Length: 408
Image (cartoon, rainbow, N blue to C red):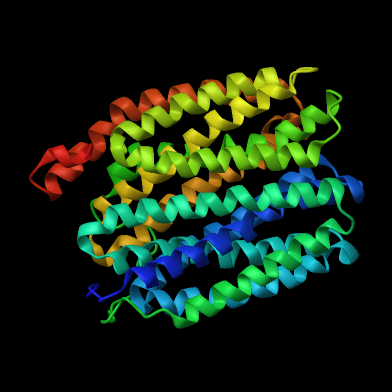
């Protein structure tokens, strides 16, 4: 595969702007989902389903989107995906009238479209930047998307908490952003100048299994498992503890989580991927400990440091995982391995529903869930610092002579 287009800084900036718009749209719905759950008298499990069906769409897109882009090209996948995202936002505009079925259908479409854009867009930006700047471009993509994830729910939280017609205003803003992203994707050039005639690969590229299971799986689970506390558990439990401004605190929490996640991507560049991953686990454990204090009566201010720590865990693990996936995979299978990593990321995103099915429908309403996730984070940090680090060190040594690249 040839991936050496003479792309300019301007084109890379435009692609970053489009990725930001898609990420903003993906998470701006979070306060609205909580609003619908309360307004339509739905259960906490229904709220978790609104996030999980989105994650299901993402995972389907990750299975096919990356490999398809390896075969057909980046632009050929991203452009129609942006069109599907436009339809999803229009469907969300009608969700208030149609209720739960429309919400689920729209969120699924949004997941499919966003998943393809996130994973293929990351590879697209990497190829625009060229081989020398590939790893930095991958981390930049993660940072830009984290900024979108931060501002989307923060703005939406303000709209839902204090303005009339919150769902309409939220989705009108998203509609404008998606239209802008669609125009950008249409204008950008393809970076794959050759097509492969072989069948696409769905699954792990040859020789990457050990690195995937020992490193990318635990690293991926760190990204959103704790972030979902800020979107579901924190506002629900704060409401039960007597805090009234739950939509706003959801937005503030998400802003802090994703804002610190964006900052952490640049910190990860200095740490190196192997160090960044296990430090992410420790940050997740600290966030859970602080979060447990936050959901006690009168403890809502603890949400702020808890969200910051969770954001560091999010950003460090995402940047580390993308960078390692980029190094482990041969160029013709890079999209496939990054897609598999993102599947693990969004299994963590689905953790509220998984926990609700395993422990009962009120699982996200109890502080013990936060404590248990803290123990999980600490155990994952230990795994990544030992077995995980050894797995990717061996693989990278086999691929490239200098082993010091692991932490550079």
